[in-house]
Image 1 (tube, rainbow, N blue to C red):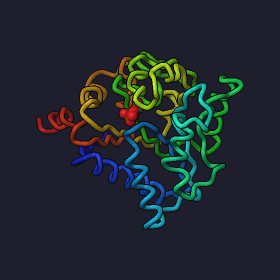
Image 2 (image 1 turned 180 degrees about the horizontal axis):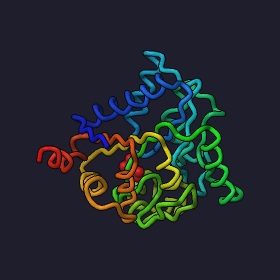
Image 3 (image 1 turned 90 degrees about the vertical axis):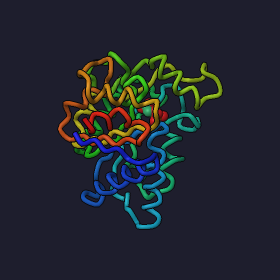
Image 4 (image 1 turned 30 degrees about the horizontal axis):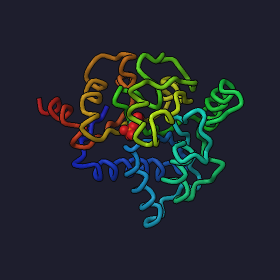
Length: 247
Ligand code: PGA
């Protein structure tokens, strides 16, 4: 596991974008696993800049998002379909047919989950999975006490996640209670993982995930067992990590 502490959020975002761009330069038809939330916004911004100014090519790239709220159509501005299109996809030259995000309103949730995992397998598996981390240690929407062996599945969101995500909705009641998420097993099958964390509020959880025991109460801790993880944090999220590096 590599742990990199960037100077600032902007620096973290620029470095994350370089890692994703590097993956695409080496393998233009890479399968990228993508995340939503506040953390990767700067990375998407930088990737768009590199696409526009330097010609980073997404024509052959394939993407799979980690998760989607259940009950929100793609047109809802809080859905992750909307987020991805608005913050990334509409600004680059990715083919619409190469974009995969779990359906927010599937007729059959179980079938949608199986379909999603099958698609990932058929595209050859994820080459580089970008992850954020929740204040409760979740990755994707794999909430504390999740089963490590889970593949893509329906999840009930944790109260802490609902509270954390309420900032994006008018009222907390509007935050969906359920989602579809890639499971830990799906994530662990990715060949490379890039875990991002930004801000003071992530300092303790990222430390616990990396330096304390592997436990379902901190789902991100399972990444200690992955063979190719890069952890990239900004200074604010990395204060405890820095202390460990200095010791
Ligand atoms: P955030 O969310 O980037 O908005 O902090 C991360 C997460 O919940 O995984």
